[in-house]
Length: 449
Image (cartoon, rainbow, N blue to C red; front, side, top):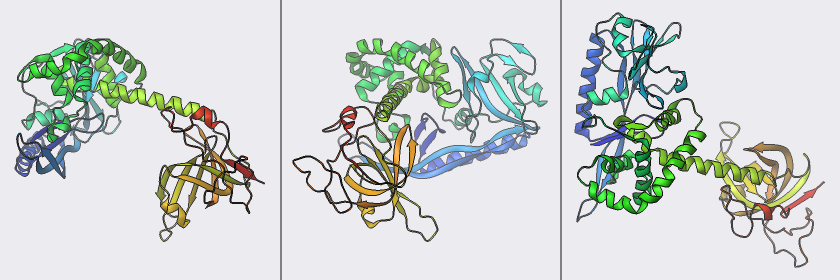
């Protein structure tokens, strides 16, 4: 039985064996019946997928365990026409929204007013409120926990509200008393842990690995194995103290989503302390930072490449292009009986060719293959900021050695092929013989009018 895995998006996933799955279903049935008895509609369901985990055995062979990946889903609870949208936890940097089983993030975090209650119309230091929506009018209200019973006209609180509360009712809550740690310390230990042991999400526990969240928890709170963890982190802590504030500032400036994972993460990062419930969210700042920087490098490389990629010829011209295949995908035919087509994208240095064909040769082409084709320009398009020349009726030309006197213009009767231009990597790094700047020489193209 493994704990929940909460990734950047999506619901928590548990790994259960058959016996645990049966017990969980029985507990959910009891929970559901209690909700119905109190007059609450909505439901809780389990999405079950067979899965395996490999567990290492000290001194022996690894053992594969068969079980199920289980996700809690369903419909949010309702009462008297009011649907429970989310629980709101106030943190120093804003709010964290926790949604009911089966509900997706639908409310922008900055629309929530921490501490306010639309029922009693007062604002005070409330740590938790509830968002409810009217099924008929769509009106969204924020109600304090202590006012919820009066607001609903019901003497009892909902049996279940969020996935966390369902998990706790099933006996899957995290043990120990709640704690809070300095945000800078959490990020420092998190970065050092990733450098020392690599990033491991919660699902890694099922493969005999300790999730990074638990490594950081041990470093912060102590416990069995904490000494070994701290010894592993020690060589990286000095640099981590420098990187952590930079990482935090970069994410706060770069994450712009107003709802879901990014909004929750920025709310935690804006605060001075991280509670036990938000520890895993705060630790995930390290891979989130890597993804953000990687996307920036990709965008910069695309911008640099876009500066030298031009459209080739005019619509109706017959052209010959040489380059390297960067995409080779099967796509459905036009009708039910039509054969699957192949879409190819070829990087030719100063041009990008795109074609869709059912020619036999195209089914053998793979990403990274050199390719010289001749075809008729069908259209000039733009994809992700890059100019693309769309070819129709493409034909593959067999490569031939380039003349010592240099490339010459190609004609339909000539099989001479210009030098193949190596593609430019989108992360900005040079690949093989040629970079984006070198590709601007324009070789690999020929136009016939």
